[in-house]
Amino acid sequence: MTAIGALLTAIGLAAALVARVGVAPAARGGGVAAHLARLLTMIVLLLALRLAGSALSSPVLVAAKMLVAAWLPFVTLRLAEEMVRRHAPRLVKLLALSGAGAFSLLAIIFQLVWAGPALIALALFQAAVVVAILTHLWAQRGSISLAERHAVDMLALAFALALPLLATDFAFAFPDLPFRGGSFAAIVFVLACSRLAGVASRPLGLLGDVLLVAGAGVLAALAAYFAGAPAALYPALAATGGAAAALVLLIERFADTPVRGEGILAPIARAAPDEAAILAAHPLLANAVTVTAEALSDLPADLLAALAAKPVVTAARDPMSETLTGAARELLARYGASHLLRLSPAPSPRFLAISGGALDEARLTRELTIVARLLERAP
Image: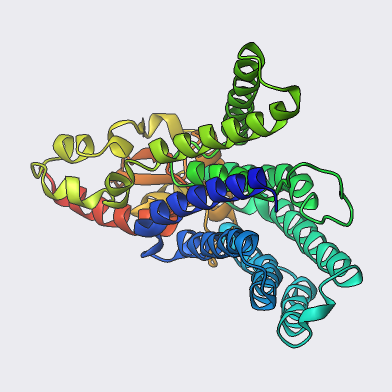
């Protein structure tokens, strides 16, 4: 690995560590955040092993690196399943699991075969599982809330942007590159994770981040040009400038993670016990849209009563009624919401349309259910 390659790997490692620490509070609640934390841990391990390998040539490091790379597709598949709350087809699971096991054996038992055919097989295996993951996400995106759909689309975009960069890590296919794109692939994915951790998990947001990073790289190259630096240094300086900009962006974005990790119950516990104070206690509630019975007059009365019987309405499938499931999803899509919090039940039901992030969707549902119970007793 060249010096610039080692520097980019170090920046990518720092970015992955920032994201891993940033999602830790949400990961304690399980769900998507827990699977995302596992995937970020794998990325941290892979980049750390690559960086160690640039300073120390050891068959053990090579085996460890390939072992992590073999299990990355399976961990990614588990994250995708959790995001859409649907199991992938059995064949896809078997492919990911058997491939991880087979390449793990190659890494541990036959360390010396990591060249040529083995690397090509690993690349094909990773690409096949990623394509299967994208297919699964696309097939199931209609069954989840709008906020979750945005997150799924953003994750798919991150894969699409990262795959060409990952391909450059295979030196046999791209032998003449000054540095590899694997570190940038990790940075793109971590940028997506940073948006997944907030409420702005939209594909256009990720594209904006990528353009910002690319712009920083261009500015670094221009600065080198006007400073009279040799032209051969421009690509390395542009890459370093872009990676450094991404790291600064991630640090700034995850700086308020403790606030996000606190959830909505702690601020509500400190508020006065009336409806207005409870709803003003947290930005997620204060910025939500009130949905009155008049706004829902197009719904049949029995269907509206069934929705109002729930303290919190989500896009999760109701096993008792497909009609109720469809109505809930239509309402959530109408208001761009992930949850409808019941403010008052029949005869004039009112809801609060809340758009939360997809990272801690399950925890948010539990907390909003508690809030709904508190509002029932608030003066």
